[in-house]
Length: 69
Image 1 (cartoon, rainbow, N blue to C red):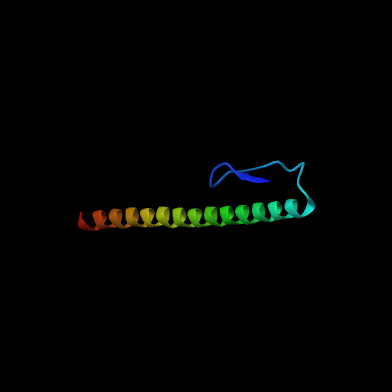
Image 2: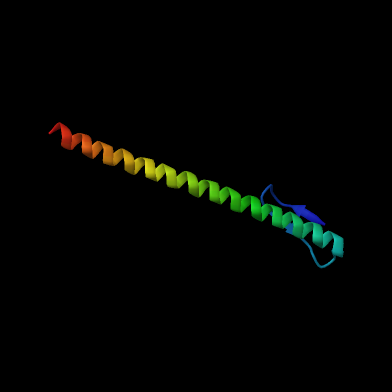
């Protein structure tokens, strides 16, 4: 009953599904959602540190310019 259209998109005709099939589908959706949220958190963390390191580099460059003048 679960028809994957692509790797990341799941199509489902739930009206004809039995209780057990619905529970399996719901479990799969929860796993997919939690995996997605974990990926989002990881990307946000990487972005934070990337921006922080860039700002630290800019501050160091500014201090180096001031000290050499």
